[in-house]
Image 1 (cartoon, rainbow, N blue to C red):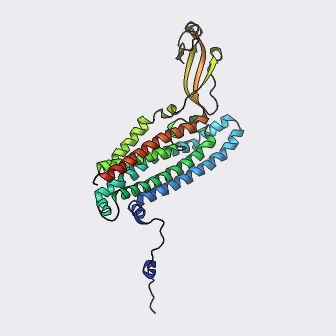
Image 2 (spheres, one colour; image 1 turned 90 degrees about the horizontal axis):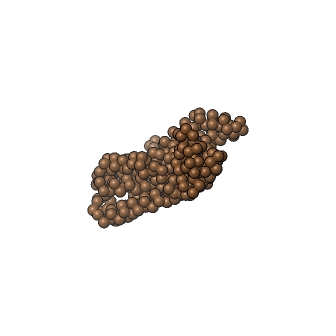
Length: 328
């Protein structure tokens, strides 16, 4: 008795099995599927981990708050705070992955292998090929960074006054929550793609993109959040001392104020043998505190994200324009 081997669906019916992607988007996915699938799987794992940590945080946060501030601080100083810091470190790698492993090889890899010549000699124009390549990479980057940002933000918000000592203006929080990770990831992607187009070598483009990421983290981001909003001010008579920082706020600067409204450094007269006499001689009458309120954080983040996103879109547009007009 012979056993018939069933033919594939395409051969039996003459029809292709259904696909989510077709044509050029499918080709781009096939070319870079290893990197795309790896990013999606790592994103899913990261989101599951952070949402589980959020559940754990909420479980200890309620009883800890019931026992007073000391218990909360004691609990937050255990493995929960360490897990948060580790997750913040991993979140800071999202833009690096987008730029180095998605952006830099996107075009440079095709140029090295000669794939670009094969594709653009068919019925596909160079502009359309570049647009689809960029579109698929942008879609993957936005999906992954937005999902990770949402999970990290959901974990941080219930205990925002505990993690990182409540300082939401630091890199660990400000650059890893809300819309900022998405915009920064897109900027790194755009820089990686542009470098891959101009230098024509994948490893060199990856190295230069990594260098850009280091410069961004060490130099360009320092104290950036403070430039996106006007600090609020509290003033106390000098006899009452420094004003108390409102709940959820972050300190920006401290001053002492004389009777004419002139500002002096916070440490003025601090090292004098008679500080009160020194203040009297200088006419200092008040203590001034400048701070950013917790309710200012979303506006500062969206302003920062909008500027970074504008830069990313400009670089992507330049890359597309240049790639359409220059031989690849």
